[in-house]
Amino acid sequence: MHSPSSPPDLIGQSPIFLDALAHASAAASVDRPILVIGERGSGKELFAARIHFLSPRWEGPFIKVNCAAMSEELLDSELFGHEAGAFTGAAKKHRGRFERAEGGTLFLDEISSASLRVQEKLLRVIEYGEYERVGGEQTITADVRIVAAANVNLPARAEAGKFRADLLDRLAFDVVIAPPLRKRREDIAQLAAHFANGMASELDERFPGFTPEALHTLQSYSWPGNVRELKNAAERAMFHWSSAEESGPIEKIILDPFDQGEALAPDLAMPASEAERDKPSEMMDFGAKFDLRAKLDEIEKTLVTDALARSTGNQKRTAEALCLTYDQMRGLVRKYDLAGGS
Ligand SMILES: Nc1ncnc2c1ncn2[C@@H]1O[C@H](COP(=O)(O)OP(=O)(O)O)[C@@H](O)[C@H]1O
Ligand SMILES: [Mg+2]
Image 1 (spheres, helix red, strand yellow):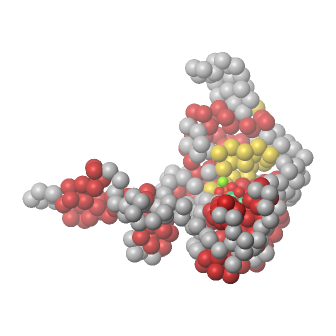
Image 2 (cartoon, helix red, strand yellow; image 1 turned 30 degrees about the vertical axis):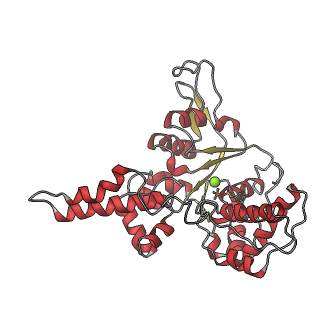
Image 3 (cartoon, protein in one colour; image 1 turned 180 degrees about the vertical axis):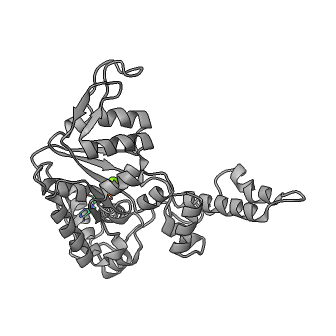
């Protein structure tokens, strides 16, 4: 954990990662919005914090809001505040995060989840530095720099009309890309050792290192959950080593904690409910005349949606499960508008 008043340590030496860091550091000094794009767990929040602490606003507040964690109404009043009596339950005036971030940086995580109405208000703050509290008449001025984070789907969402293109243009004054871990495998050993070390001190143990086989396992996996997933796997490995009272280097890596042997595991390849299981056959019951293309689309959409849900929205794994290329998968996600939040 980094102290809240200094830039966080970002571990990694790979050229692609160092490029991203250099880009973030350079972008930090310009008082304009920045968009940090990357897959889940790729370190977007750490990049955002680094941008703040390397910016002229570093002594000001660094305030975070996760736009996916709240309903539209709540997000609106969280960001912009509300007047007393603005809605049921709003007994007192509430300062929004914009007010609290005055003179500093506001980190808007999962910006793609913000409703179009909130997006419109955000655009106005960026363009004119002005907004009103929910239920308020008075115009408030804001001196806040926005750093927003989104997964790689944001431009696609703008294309689909789900995200304001004009807001995207403004946010994308500069775009920092947090690279996925599978594109910087050289960093895996160092990151894994770092996280295992942290777990070892928590357990009052010494980190014994990994065996070459364990390292190979870590280095060849695809890491759809990126650094967050690696952190878990490294900590889990250290913890198991410690509880099994082993002595040599860590051998055992558990990538999938759900995978505990065939006999116990629920069949994840099967649809969850009766209703879902019946879907494909039910859809075969077409009647005398039907639109073949539309029906095939419907079937395709259902099967892809289910497969996506089974890999918790991970398009790469879903593509593998459906024997599709990643590009084909992305095409289908776009066609049926299946992209979720970040
Ligand atoms: N380069 C890095 N060095 C050290 N820790 C990292 C790095 N990148 C990510 N992490 C850690 O991985 C986890 C996920 O990072 P986070 O910034 O929350 O990802 P995201 O916001 O993209 O989902 C956090 O625990 C973070 O501290
Ligand atoms: Mg995050």
